[in-house]
Length: 105
Image 1 (cartoon, rainbow, N blue to C red):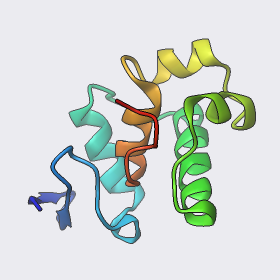
Image 2: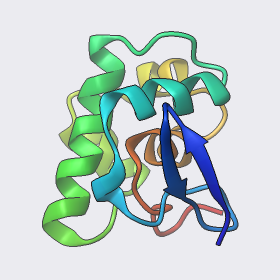
Image 3: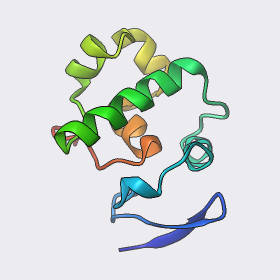
């Protein structure tokens, strides 16, 4: 289990780059992870998706599928792909500090 320093905090990651303990997450960590993913600034729309994913993870123990994400977060599919290019559910989960959503390759 790799560990690295993100935003001044030592964080544990799995082999695919997802945080293993979502309680270590904060918005500074999210901003740093977003920059690693090529997203220079997290807007309110980014945070709406991230907060929705975190809420779902905390309530259900897993992140939402891309289908549920677009239906229930209030962010349409096209915008989701603009906010988180090349794999929005996976990229948003990584930034949100949760495990990889089921169904993501």
